[in-house]
Amino acid sequence: MKIAVIDNNKIITKETDTPALNNRTGAIVQVLGCGLCGSDIVKFVHKISKNGTVLGHEIVAKIVDINSHTNFQQGDVIVTSHHIPCGKCDFCKHGNVSMCEHFKKTNIIPGGFSEYVYLSEEHLENVAHLKPENLTEIEASFYEPLGCCVRAVKRANLLQGDTALVIGLGSIGILMAQAIKAYGINVIGCDLISERVEFLKSLGIDAYQELPQEFKADCVFMTSGADKAIDTALNHVQNGGKILVFSSTPKNSGYANNEIYYKELTVLGSYSPAPVDLKDSLNLLTEGKVKVSGISTVYNLEDIEQAFEDTMSNKIMKAYIRVTR
Ligand SMILES: [Zn+2]
Ligand SMILES: [Zn+2]
Image 1 (tube, rainbow, N blue to C red):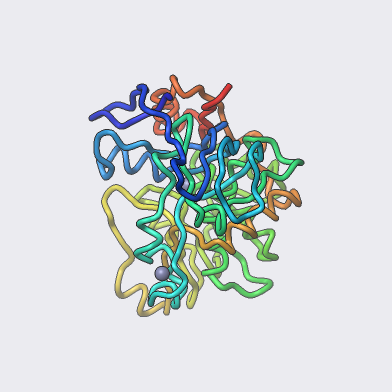
Image 2 (image 1 turned 90 degrees about the horizontal axis):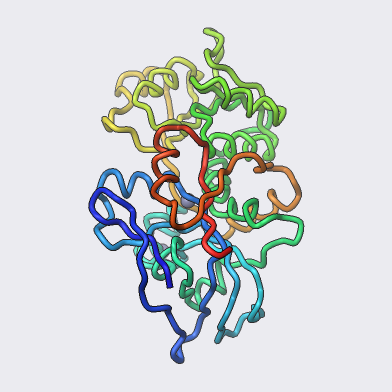
């Protein structure tokens, strides 16, 4: 089968053995396609993942072989995510599922940018769902990234009538703003790129290239990976408000101690979703409360390096890698 792997400063495709169940429980799935996540870009650019790693986790796939107690069957088209929290450890008990050791250990093998993938029984039990019939393959691939946003919205724990600001309207910002709205919170977005501002507006959410100076938000969602967005956040967060950090920044710069203190700010992070957030994400997509058409640009697996480049240069908002034609 064909896989895409990290090879020093490149992503290359190559042939490898197709996985088989060999008496294991779980399923072998044929990947139809897989979204390219911002975290894949970070893992590649900052060399967090080593050579030979198959990135990709936002898969839509068809079950081709299965040995499971679940109701899934051969031929089912499913969505799944890659990590599963144990639910019992101290991190899980505090709701910090992304920090759970089991969560970090579990994965889809070898990764989404691969023609076939092995899913464990645990994946089938906890994070896999049938692709809803009213969603296209590409729409369904937003199951995991939207799940991340849903968790962030829940962690922000806002009150009805609150106003949120989303800084950075890449694909995640667009999802985040819609998720916030779906939870009944007022939301506006901002981004320096005018097409992105217009895109959010076309979804019925107000957005700006430059925010009105006096505008204050109860919570700022940081979906921008730019260091200077931090100043924008500090300028526009309400006294007593929250800043939800949802991306890394190149300089790893932060929020000033005294501003947090004098303004009584809460700065919190949110990374990856729990199974319940993923379920809620799928419902939002199925009910049409979060719209994702027009966000993705489709690439074939052989052209994956171009997809990385076009995402990094902001030429496109999000890439969907079609793995099986
Ligand atoms: Zn993702
Ligand atoms: Zn745990």
